[in-house]
Image (tube, rainbow, N blue to C red; front, side, top):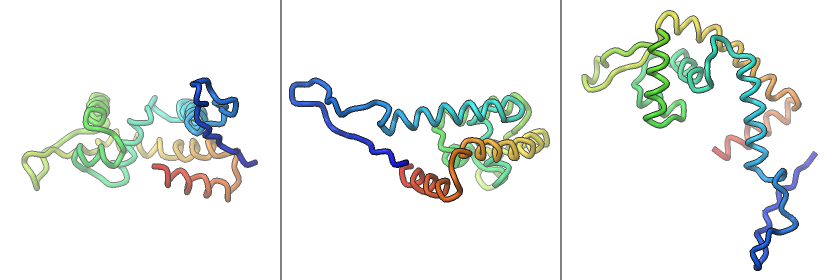
Length: 153
């Protein structure tokens, strides 16, 4: 099923064009898909993790200790957001910080043993979340969708 997105601007008088349909607009469609995915995430993930907390755990599990700044860049979070996420994960005993031996001004964030365990339990659920989110699509459609969305980042 092809969906034609209409981008007709308002008429010169300022009244909306009769060709504009909210439900055909990319932002509206992305918001609905995001809401669906967020619901699937909340129903499936372990340990009451939020998407941002899971992203931090998953990135540290994948790459090991790193600076908070680098962790924020790799998880697409600004400085204030990553600080808050790291603080909350630290409060839960899932991460800790230590001085960077290569740069005394910097601290590294790393998983605790509990964080390692949580990440290793959560990752299979995250894979299930992806599967459930993409379930309406065939294999070729999934590849196309992910390729197209990657271009929009």
